[in-house]
Image (cartoon, rainbow, N blue to C red; front, top):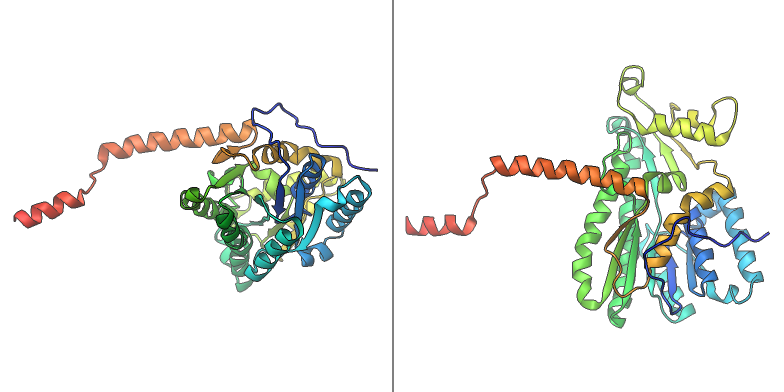
Length: 353
């Protein structure tokens, strides 16, 4: 049975584009990528669907969902001609270049690049420093969440620049503003890629290339992508450490989602070994979880004057506002005790002396 068309849970003030667009999605078999692909095809757009072959083969549930979607697209009027699946590992610059070239060859152009590849490493800073294995996860986190978007953006920029048009949309989370205990490295990768893209936006503006950062709640990205947990240290056990660590919050949430009488899935996050898993989300739950984010991305994509940053959801906006309020208060205190150095004036005084 075909999945029902996506409907926005809320009315949106964002405009809808009129002409069909060609989208390139970096992780089309993720719940967000899958839902967005279906939404775009239903609205007449074309989709180059990037898929990481290794994860596609290992994760049977995602493989089944994506294969069902591809079969659905083939069976619906003109969907099949507007969907092109391309192999893509964003951590490899050569694959990024070939995937973009394949999309342009298939559709004649690319209008919107949507970077939505992500994973989360769960563990405190000390826990991630326990062994070579846990330390390697830090690099892996940045390879996927930072260097992955960097690679695909670099592969796309020469084409966008040559046609003097294009739109890059980066999916992060409000963790790009807010530090979260137990997700320090994940937050660091989000802050890093946002700083990169904020700077990039100024550099590419003269070429009529737009940049938008979309920030949903943290749960959107964490619960719809791979979660990897490192062995916990006893010093950070809830009985001796009052910090509300993400491991404990996620463990309880995963157990409730699993629905088992005995905790099973959540326990994996407290295993003495490195564990990787996907949240056990039912198809309808996935769709409801990502619906507002998908609608926002589809609404801003390809417009002449898109927002530079779009925070999705009331809770996310409220959290960021509270953070900005705190920062503003800190800046006021800082101004009272700061003494800025005027380099030019110091130079003039030295010359006069």
